[in-house]
Image 1 (cartoon, rainbow, N blue to C red):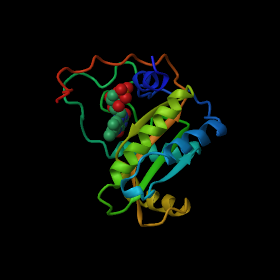
Image 2: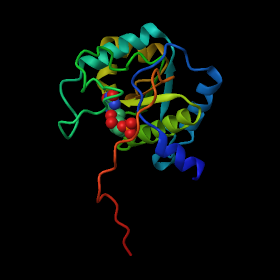
Image 3: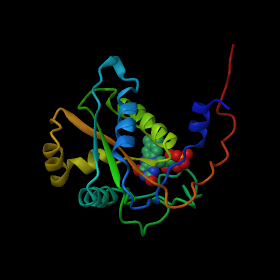
Image 4: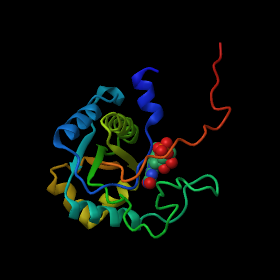
Length: 194
Ligand SMILES: Cc1cc2nc3c(=O)[nH]c(=O)nc-3n(C[C@H](O)[C@H](O)[C@H](O)COP(=O)(O)O)c2cc1C
């Protein structure tokens, strides 16, 4: 199979990480993949901050978890048996799953396509990571997390101006267990018309 498509089909969300940190060279390549994502109007407004501080990431994870108030899954089935999410297991106290590297994606504040820009950059990041043997998971509640006193201080400390707003996280690290298989795809979601 085409190697790019194979990489896309194989990637899964990872929520159990080894403590080992992501290598700097790999991280640089992953972030570069994010920089080359499509962006609305060619604006290149997304700012990515990769944090490798365990203390800061743990605090962000705790705050992020505090903003989760219920299930997101459309069915009663769990999101992942092998890699449980906070929706599956209320005992998980870190919304960022203890991942050694946390990338926060900031979009241009009040720009209609800011979230979309961050999401396509996130996908580039996750696919690049997977191609390098690095697990990832996209995580929401970034606006809420950075609206807190801790978040606002951190954004300032990181030198991200107030015209940018956190829209998404991608966490990265080495999978602690064998990655899960993809769930079967739901039917009738594709139409080719002519
Ligand atoms: C927009 C978006 C938001 C997501 N938010 C979270 C999240 O907050 N926490 C989490 O554990 N996973 C989150 N995920 C990961 C999904 O749960 C995951 O992609 C889905 O269950 C399918 O699994 P797969 O990525 O292994 O194919 C998010 C994914 C997307 C696309």
